[in-house]
Amino acid sequence: MSEDLLHELQQKIAQLEEENAMLRRDSNDKPSGDTVSVPEDLRPIFDVAQQTVSDYFRHLKMDPTKGTIEINDQRYVLVRASALSIDFLSTIQNLYGDRGEAEAMAIGKNFLFDIAHVIGMNDAKNFHEKMNLTDPISKLSAGTVHFAYSGWAYVDIVGESNPSPDENFYLIYHHPYSFEADSWKRAGKLSNTPVCIMNAGYSSGWCEESFNLPLTAVEVSCRAKGDEQCTFIMSPPEKIQEH
Image (cartoon, rainbow, N blue to C red):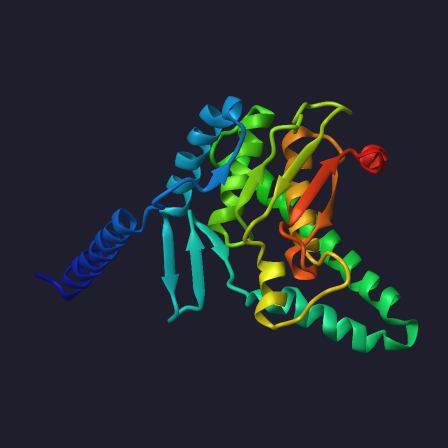
C-alpha cells in the first residue's frame, strides 16, 4: 500500500471517529425539555422548529488547531457574554463621561441595538435559506429556538401576541435567561434602566427578516434592574408607543 493511500485512509478513519464521537455527544446532550415556551395554538409549529434547529446545531465542529468553530458549515465565534453588556457599557460610559451618564449610556445602547438588529436579520436570512423555511411563522419559530441554542436567552411568548404579517404585528415575550441581565447580576450590579439591548435588537431583526416588515422591540422590565422578568414588546416602529 502506498504512503499516500495509507495517509488518506488514516485521515478518513480520524474523520469517522470524530463524527462518531459527535453523534455520541448529540445523543447524550439533547435538551431534556422544551427550548421555547409558546401559546398552545402555536405549539405544533414550534415543535417542528425545535427539531429543525436541533438538526442544524448537531453539525458542530471545533478545531482549536485551526482556530475554527463551525456549525453546519458556517463559522461561529465564542464571545464572553459580559464583554457585550456590562463591560462594554461601562467602557462607553468612561469614554463619553464628559457627556453625562445618561447620554453615554444611550450611545452604548444605541450601538448595541443596531449591531444586534443587523446580526439578527442576517442570521435569519442565512438560516431560512439553509433550512428551506418559507412561511413567516415557521421562520419566527426557528428564531426563538436558534436564540436558545446560541446562548442569547430562552424565549417565552405570551398569549396576547399577534404575529401577523402586517401593521398589526404585536409580540410580547419574556427572556428568562437573558445573557445581558445575567452579566449584570453576576457582577452584583443593579441598573437604573433595562439592559437587554442586544436581546431586543437581535429578536426584532430576526422577526423583521422573517415577516418582511420593519419591526423594533423595547424591553419594558428587566431582571438587571430588580424586576421579576425581562419582558419585551415588539411591533412596527410607528406603533411601539401604543403598547
